[in-house]
Image 1 (cartoon, rainbow, N blue to C red):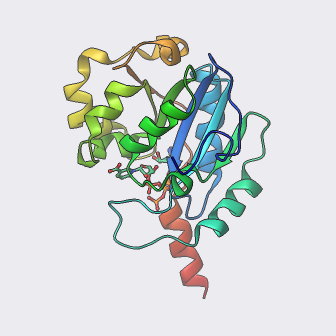
Image 2: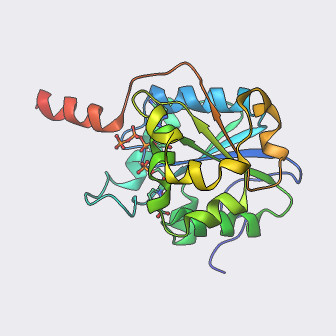
Length: 204
Ligand SMILES: Nc1ncnc2c1ncn2[C@@H]1O[C@H](COP(=O)(O)OP(=O)(O)OP(=O)(O)O)[C@@H](O)[C@H]1O
Ligand SMILES: O=C(O)c1ccc[n+]([C@@H]2O[C@H](COP(=O)([O-])O)[C@@H](O)[C@H]2O)c1
């Protein structure tokens, strides 16, 4: 193995409830910060790790250099319970199903929860081995402007309808055996990296 928990740069205790927010973060914005704080609270997590992706396998354009995005993430997300990680670069993977498998191997006993915005639940069935993600760990989905309906009518929501936890039970998601997922209607922040990149381009 080319890396281990030490190389990954953080320690996690057995039994800890740890949320994983994967993203391109190109650039990171207050929407990411907001859903992270909401996830900590609503899903009663001990920590959240931002997994800064080397590149989304479904996106044609490559993102900004990883080191620049890591630095921007560290600058915007400063919280004692949130870690910023380039674990996928260390592990040499871009596919979430594989990343989660490797994280569970590296940190046995840690109670991981995959976190994502509603737009990603709507697309989840296009990800590699997506069912493995649902079967591997609980999934917390956070409302996003314009994506609530698409998420709730998505293939993943349909296939795993039996595994959906009602929102009022969000606090027990992290300790619920998978498959288990929960959609939380948090207050929404209308920001996206695409819009921020577009605005920056227009200024030039
Ligand atoms: N404003 C937001 N509200 C809720 N979830 C969000 C928001 N912005 C990003 N997310 C979620 O955060 C995760 C990482 O997002 P990502 O880095 O792709 O940012 P993005 O703004 O969606 O970028 P892009 O516009 O390039 O797709 C994804 O699960 C995404 O759904
Ligand atoms: O595993 C896949 O096939 C897959 C396909 C699309 C997106 N993802 C992951 O979803 C997360 C959000 O991606 P993004 O680019 O929308 O920020 C990030 O961790 C990606 O690696 C994963």
